[in-house]
Image (cartoon, rainbow, N blue to C red; front, side, top):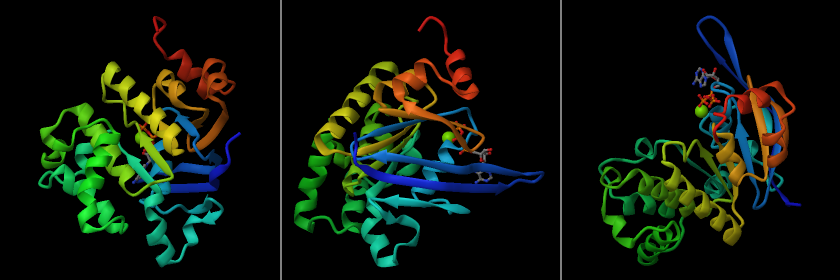
Length: 256
Ligand SMILES: Nc1ncnc2c1ncn2[C@@H]1O[C@H](COP(=O)(O)OP(=O)(O)OP(=O)(O)O)[C@@H](O)[C@H]1O
Ligand SMILES: [Mg+2]
């Protein structure tokens, strides 16, 4: 149904602990299509954030391949890497920690434009206004600092910055988890609209199966570094086959 954008093959990452090594990722294989959202669910410590960080090249995997549009992401030349670097972006649960508290939001959004040589000095101001507008914020936001805006606005700002480098895939790691129900709903709508308009792919990591189900086309269930189940979101989250999937659903409050 979707053309393939991301292919992950046999991704493994161990962390050496004091007493034992942890297989944070153990032979992880999956694909994400163009314009598709793959949800990732799993208990705490199952490797979801490690997967996100490996995709962002914040963590070097021990083994495995990451292909974007058929290009091997780990063996790109430095030059190509610089050119492609913007194509995967991430939004974290706590955007404040990802922003310099001393610089304005406008400057924070400008940086990726500059780094990826998007536009010229003159056009960047308009580009920032356009990015803010795309996530439903006013241009006036650009002159504020990250701690001067609300929690819901922060997540929009983080999304605007992620979009600045024109990513093909945005990884959202518990990005909406700290928001209240109505703000989360607004962000979900925004993400869906962006995807429909621009064909962006999402890797949506979340602990709430109901939220993950709302946005995901397919879902992968992780446990102890492995993908234990994957399939259509509705099928996996209404009738999971794996023990981990069953446990996640069983843990939901019954009044939902
Ligand atoms: N830098 C690190 N050094 C050592 N161990 C790590 C490191 N990062 C993650 N781990 C371990 O790897 C495993 C997977 O962690 P990860 O953060 O990927 O889990 P997660 O699924 O994101 O959990 P949560 O739902 O709580 O965010 C855990 O056992 C964790 O303790
Ligand atoms: Mg995590």
